[in-house]
Image (cartoon, rainbow, N blue to C red; front, side, top):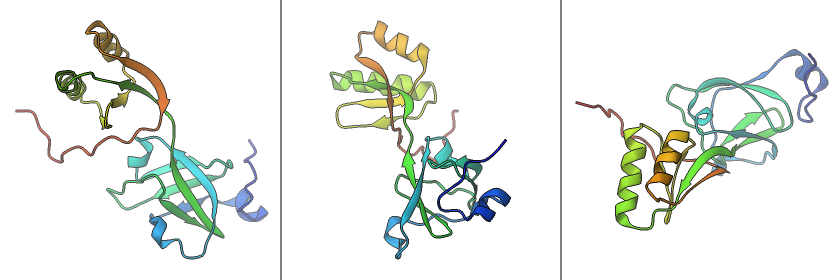
Length: 163
């Protein structure tokens, strides 16, 4: 199987080795290097410290980040000649538009009870697609739609336990 040629690789490095990235740079630290590629990551991928990825230009990179590192939209990964920007991938989500505070509380409880991640907007809640939850919310008369959208849930409280 032949790898795609990357514009930011020399012909030698593209065919012989994968770039290993071991740190995240925030956009304010760009220096003078240009963004030469992008990598679209799901919520789950943004939480993995060690993984192989393929950029939008088809180049393979390897992450070897410190334990506990979390990538965010706009983070920069250094490669020879510039930066790879992290962007949010579209994900299969449920977009819920509660009509009252009671519905917000009910939906948030249902999502939390299933241990699903939750993103909270001003007039909506979003979680990863789960067919049983979608059916249940529809049966309860709650406005819900399945969509392909970026997903950035709130951070979970560390040390969460059930009695």
